[in-house]
Image (cartoon, rainbow, N blue to C red; front, side, top):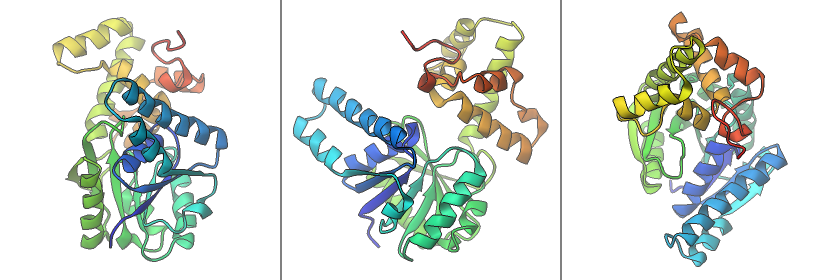
Length: 283
């Protein structure tokens, strides 16, 4: 089976980034989101990133137009019923993801393969609701998806070898490096990354050091390109909280989210996407 058309469900930071890299790789893309305002924002973000590349001489204007022409926006899952591959990127809530896959399982023909960009939720559990778990696997892109090379590839209990082969070829065509991990909460990237971010927030809450000091220590002391608090803002504090809640529930109390993180999310300070998190992005 050859993948020609991809449906990306959810037009947020990850969804728009994945839609962009898919279109850049020659795929036809349907970018779907029930929230039309989010959909416009996501598509505009793709256009702006491509225009920046044109202005820097890294992309021809003709190429930009060709990439954008491959992306169609839609506000209903019904519009994705004829795609070859689904990449789901909705909010990191298991019940919402399962509802999406239940609907898609009924809408899409047997040829359609399903993937999820979940950061932490069981692939096997999500696969079951589609009614065809052998056609389902995890495809966890890193942020920003249009430039980061890694994709964590996660088989569910019943994922077929053929599904793995096809999805791996899609990742490689997108210029990614697929790395296989087992279906376990948080997989590998977030199992390691989120406790570091959470401990950095605990350090800030406890007054051990300022936000700038914490980030500088990790950049200069551990050679990280971005400090943990700055990285949390980049990922989205609501996403960090959702992942930690899964890790706490499925693994151990040691993953308990810092109260300061909960407070900031409750107050709408979600990081770059909201204009304010640990840092102010409004200026």
